[in-house]
Length: 145
Image 1 (tube, one colour):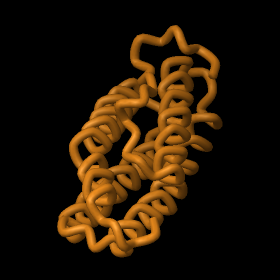
Image 2: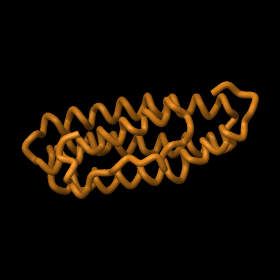
Image 3: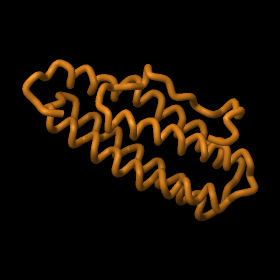
Image 4: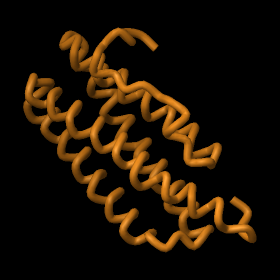
């Protein structure tokens, strides 16, 4: 990954693993793309790249959330509705960021919001919410995950 010297970049560590290979691989990929977005925002020169990454994140988040929600249904995760609402709210937030980008371009304010919102949400969501799914999955013996 380029520009890893950026202080705003988020670093993957195995503490983010929830115990499902597919979800963990998707989380790693999300980290990579969020870091690329941060670097592109900081560069300021590659507006097309920022747009590509934002569009990717919208589509990838939808796919990732669908996969994660299917997993929750499979293992009868008791907080599924609450978790799905968090996903739905975040999709709206990301779509709003894309809308702002489309209307006003890549402003300093938008880049600051992207960093603050996306990084905080991603880290907090994995650590506080997705980890609970992993704990629940490990407690379910009779479901093939």
